[in-house]
Length: 118
Image 1 (cartoon, helix red, strand yellow):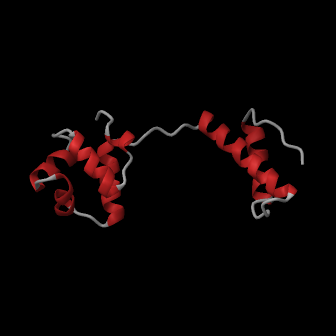
Image 2 (cartoon, rainbow, N blue to C red; image 1 turned 180 degrees about the horizontal axis):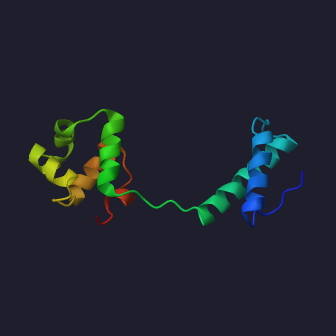
Image 3 (tube, one colour; image 1 turned 120 degrees about the vertical axis):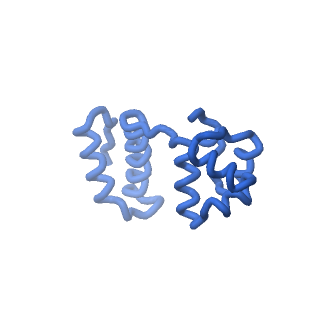
């Protein structure tokens, strides 16, 4: 097992190729250890070079509603009146702390996403 740092795109592609080769390695084996270390290195390289920002709070709500098969009426049961839901989804009304807490509890959207400005 020879693991090298991932410093550039070429190193990254080599690491991905090797990861694919040993993807089904069993834990506790030499290849299993290599898989674990490569995964950590690849994750670190991707986080440093391809950061993904947090989603817009309203888009996150809409996405989660779609995933859960919810409509505006369903969301009204979480945050209040249907007209309030419409204002929130059209970015005409800001989320309150109470709404953020309820959305986090019911829709499991991280509070870090919901508290952002929009």
